[in-house]
Image 1: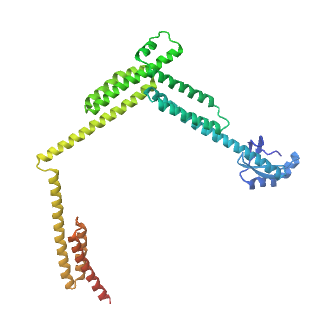
Image 2: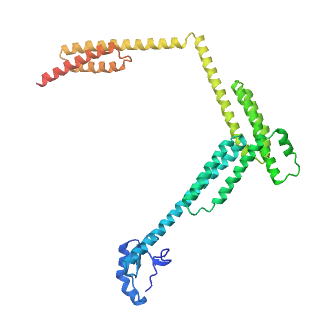
Image 3: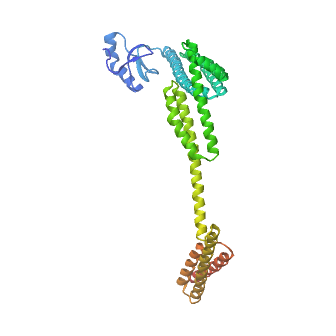
Length: 368
């Protein structure tokens, strides 16, 4: 009989085999089917073993457990190599994503004069790239990624040269009618730099106006720039630069709005002060009145506590312990209502506590 159920392709044996979820089920299969399989094929399963590749149990006609253990060791090494390769692939993918993100951000900043920071970013990315290559034997996109970084490094050098050019030199390059590929690339970088330089002039002007406190004027200039200049940037091929300009412009808008809001708060506070002065009630007078009110409330509460103490003494003298306990309980409650825990509070609390002790002694005497 040739087994037909539970058959899977085993990568360790490189052929289809039966797979059992437990050793007991594999051994039972041998027990009940061994003779029939022997009569049909001339060979019969002798023992069961766990397959690390399939994650379950197979049966085999090989009697030697020693040979089986050697095969298991071989399979385990293969699995470890595959795990290492899979983990390496995951780390390489993560590293590649990080490199692409850093270089992508840096490509914008290079036009904004942050050349030293961009070079530092490239050095960090190259270090990460070499670390991954040294750690793993297989790195399919190593040369492609390194080539992109080296090209970007050259681009940083070109931007540095363009930044140092005079307006006359830039004008001569931009005036070339039929440029070569290198000249066209240079023209594009000059145009990108000029966009950023024009924005920086406007940005510095707006920041100076904000510092001077002319927030409405700053708002009008920002709105005008967004309406006119950003249209021109949008038509250019420098979409990445455009997005960074818009982001930095948004920061200016937030800064200006924060200043306007602060001025409004100051103005509201000033008007409130004026309103108080008109009503003949300064903030100091209000505080004095509040303190006086608190003191008056405490005075009334203390008088009521004294009344409760006297009432409790009378009740204690006449043997009305229930009435005395009620007065003591109310007195304790009123003591907690006092806002100031001063000497008066301590004296009153001592009187109430003394009365409570006397009532307690009376209860003990009755019990005895």
